[in-house]
Amino acid sequence: MSLTTSSNVWLNCSVFRELGTGGEGTSSDAVSDRATAAIALSGTCSGKAIAAVLPSDTASKLVPPPPVPSSLDTEQLSQTLLEVVSDKTGYPAEMLETDMDMEADLGIDSIKRVEILGALQERYPDMPQPSLEELAETEMRTLGDVVQYMQSLASSEAAPSKEAPSDASASHLEASDITAGIPRVAIDLKFLPPPDRLEFGLPDNHCCVVTDDGSPTTSLLVRTLSDRGWTVAVLRFPQSTRPNPVPIPDAIRSFQLENWSEEHLQEQLTAIASTCGPCAAFIHLNPVFSGDSNGSVSFPQTEAAILKHVFFIAKHLKSSLNDAAQLSHGCFMTVARLDGEFGMGQTLPFSPIGAGLFGLTKCLNYEWKPVFCRAIDLSPKLDAEQAVQHIIDELDDPSRLVVEVGYTSHGRTTLTDDPPI
Image 1 (cartoon, one colour):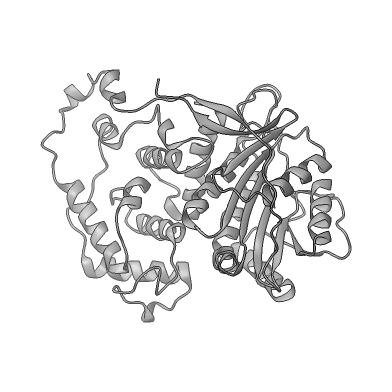
Image 2 (tube, rainbow, N blue to C red):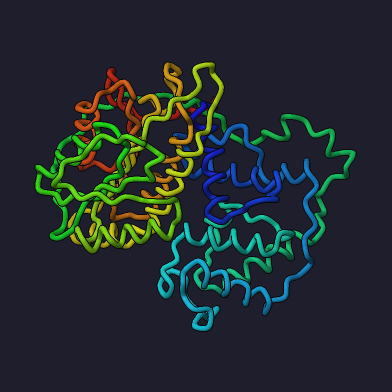
């Protein structure tokens, strides 16, 4: 498993936990379950590459499960759920009913659903931990369906398993028992030809939001987009991120985040929409965070805060980007600066946190069918002109057959998996 793959596991567990799927006191078993789902959902790893991760049934044989309630009070659970939904969505609790459709009536997407279930888990810490894979396969349309699911989860976990081995037999599980049925594949780089070009325009009176990475790349990119007639707004993270950012053209409006709160972010996004129009395209330029030269892996807290904010930005721009895509074109693009080879080049030290951008973008590509989603890894060795040219090339690519691409001085690549080993 590559460093980037491992970082995606760590990162998505961390982000989902920050967004509400756990917190202080989360058990190691719960984190393992989330890691399994995170590999399948995200990053530079295909779904087939869930090699070295234990299936949940085997994990349960190796580690005694936490105590769970034999049943949950339906009325109390329903009331708690309504309180959590009210807190997460802003709807008054008194207007919520369990027969409401989560998506049609309340606008709750899968990311928000994970937040809600995570908050429920905090209210009921002894409740069995649902896996993201199981949630993806379980149809939960209404709030009442969530209550029934949590009830069934508690009941099934409380029931003793006829096949559960004794403590003595569990200690003698062979390695072949643990890895049976798990395909192992080798991930490799695949060179791609340059993308085709079909210049897209934004819907009338819409804008493109670009985050500032503090480098000349931002200034050149927003100038290039403005020259093609786009209305561009620059969103800057708190100044502590990049104390001395490169100035942007005076004609481009910029919006400064003063702190890391989600509420302040939402205020700034609202201000952008009021001033520049609804967002039809979002481009996140992730700053370069170099890893330790001694070979150890570093996890900069500033980069983690930025990544978490990109998740929040996706949440708050969902409606705007999807609406724009229905009108003409909507775009969600993330630009990481690992090594240009998804962390597989092993030539440059880098922080692996940025790898989570690939997981987010690929998930949104499944969630937001009308929106063009693309994740790019640019080598830090590329200068601003080269970086902007590659970003524009990908922005104008009409093909949706590839979601993640990397660029180095050697060319354009993506990831592929070889046949099972």
